[in-house]
Image 1 (spheres, rainbow, N blue to C red):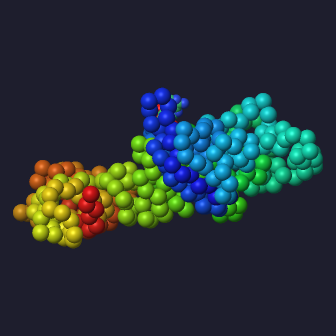
Image 2 (image 1 turned 60 degrees about the horizontal axis):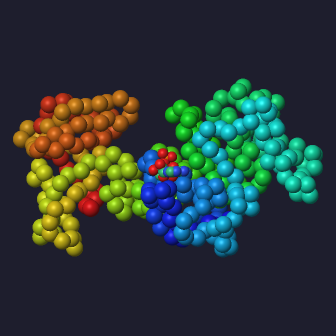
Image 3 (image 1 turned 45 degrees about the vertical axis):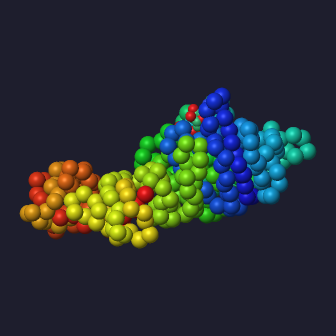
Length: 342
Ligand code: ATP
């Protein structure tokens, strides 16, 4: 099912939580809403679920106006950060719940419910846990139960609000891959809220980056990462080095005698953003930069550099660091790869 939001605005008292948001969630895609705390992600998701209603704007589901539709008439499945499982029910009964409480006439038979739950248990790889209670499961297993429960009603849309937010980094990573695989299998239109850029970039078909109640940019992970539309998006999607510069005659002059060609830009001050892995260093006794620290743990080395008074972070593969034989205190030359000017 597709969801199209137009001009969605939501206030809480005087606070503008969503400011005329336009967004299209395409049928069958996995879309991430990514943004810092308070940017309006959850509010937008709750509006899609019908748990919150906009002050202005419209929401269409498969082309039909669903702005005022009640949650139960929207065919959405919801998974929250804190596994809202029923503690007194087994895994099986938790998953079966949504089917058992259906009004008479729509309620499947006990045999059909059993078959459905077994199918879901297999989908979330928890076949042997049907008889356990939530307290007897790990956090990751509980979230898989929550997902199976949301899927039991065969929703047309799956809404996930930081579903792995309460789990540790390793489990999170595993579940992220697992969810991607699951989505590739069932293709239910899904919207996933996260403030973790790595999670969004790895998991989603498209990422909508939110800031201050607006969508700053929407695109594939590669598009938003490689071609950020604003300084905000650049900053939020990864480590950003910022160099203050001046543009004149088609060139941006940056600290340390660095310069980059910029065509069609008005003269004046500009802020250049560069990712740590877009900077390279070379030994140079009279170079404008000095290495202030080297952190070499894991496959990537992080090097802190002082460039004419501006602190830069440089990322190099560990092997590259060894080849260059750079040490703290060394002077070096800096060259820049891709520079984004905002
Ligand atoms: P987080 O990642 O912290 O959950 P978020 O991007 O999901 O953040 P929202 O939960 O959508 O942000 O909240 C957006 C803003 O609206 C916040 O500043 C929040 O305090 C405010 N807000 C949300 N719900 C309400 C409410 N019911 N009453 C008042 N303010 C609210």
